[in-house]
Image (cartoon, rainbow, N blue to C red; front, top):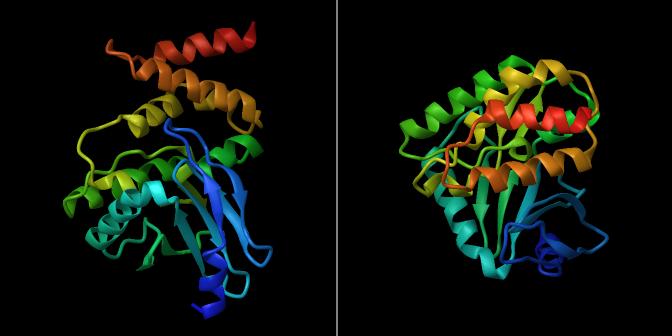
Length: 222
């Protein structure tokens, strides 16, 4: 990494929120390329070296960076996960991962093969075998690469508890994905489903993927 890149990264700024909302007010130097955004960090790339990306964390969320760094150290080498090459002041240096996220697959009507589910299950099993707790796995942090899965964003793997997000996605895939396979799903619809899911799954009563999906299909087909 060049001195110029380090200087450019110091000029990046963005705003985060207390609730789990996307970052806003992103400012990056024109020499850098914005690759992705989240709720605690953004990912940028220096076009002079496209093999890596830089995941920059907001100053208020540096504990998330340390969690992710610890997770990568514990994870070691695995073909199912991105690689982490370094931990700096406010960013991690990660391997650049090509392909579409599963979220982008839904938006663009790209088929998500069954193999992706198998790969994520194997990735989770490996993570558990090295003492991690694979959680917070969702459509935005699984890439489709030549029919296989690659996972990113492992900052919550050192946190206990199961959020059930991936298990619910798999169940939804089995029950409902055949009905929308190959269809382009509007972003507003995906966001509505996501918000409804988070609202209902946070309640104390038991959550049913089947009932949740049926209600949504009735709503959107009305």
